[in-house]
Image (tube, rainbow, N blue to C red; front, side, top):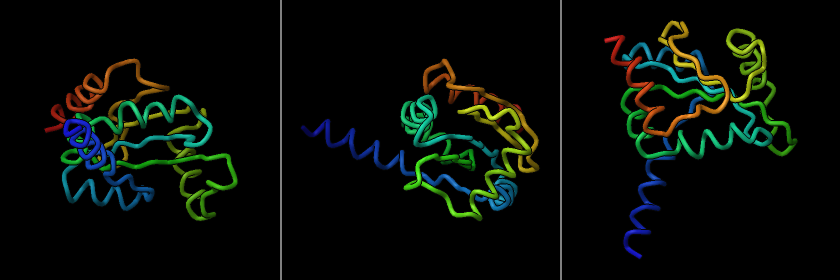
Amino acid sequence: MRTLMIALLSTFLFSTFDWQTDFEKAKQSAQSEHKLILLNFSGSDWCGPCIRLHKEIFENNAFAQYASDHLILVNADFPRLKKHELSKEQQKKNDQLADMYNKDGIFPLTLLLNFDGKVLKKWEGFPQVSPAEFTQQVRAVVDAGR
C-alpha cells in the first residue's frame, strides 16, 4: 500500500508541471532561463496518439523531471468537442502557431525549438520510443546547444 501511495504521489508531482499556451511568453522565458521550448500540437479530445503521447511520455517521471529543469513546455491544442472549446483569443494563437510550424496539420507534432523559434528537432506522430529514449533524444539536442 505504501508503494502505491508513493507511486501515485510522484506521478502527481511530476505530471502537473506547467504547459504554457502563450508562445511569445514561452520564448521570453526560454531566453531568460536559457532553456529550449518543446512545442506540442495536440487534439486532446479526439486524437488517440496525442492522448497517448501525453500519458505515456510527457507524464512519465523521467521526462517530467528532465523537462522541469531544461524545457519550456507549450501546448497548442485543437480540441473538437464544444465542452473543451478554447477561447477565441487562444484559438487564434494556436492557429498562428499552426500556420508557422504545422501547415500539414500533423497530430501529434512535437518540436524542439530554441528561444528564437528555430526548429532543432521534430517528431511527427507518436514517437516509437520509450519515455527514457524520448528524453534522451531531447537531452542530446539540449546538450549539443551548450
